[in-house]
Image (cartoon, rainbow, N blue to C red; front, side, top):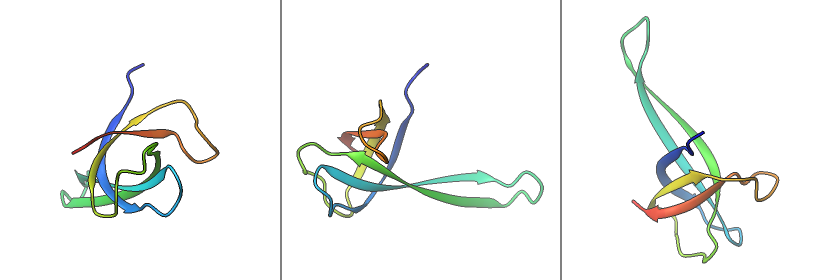
Amino acid sequence: MPRRILQGTVTSDKNEQTITVLVERRFKHPLLQKTVRKSKKYRAHDADNQFKIGDSVRIVECAPISKTKRWTVVTEA
């Protein structure tokens, strides 16, 4: 199965080797036909602590690294 790749903005870098990424998706509501924005936060592994708050990054699915980390940072978007 292919790994998902998401793009989002770093909202927290306080933890060692971990960043929190806010991913926003937009879609049209099936009944109302209005554009809806939904967002979700993902915790991603940042081995070198190189990303800071406000950076735009791409994350990719990976094997579980810890209790909450299932994503790894690939590149800066």
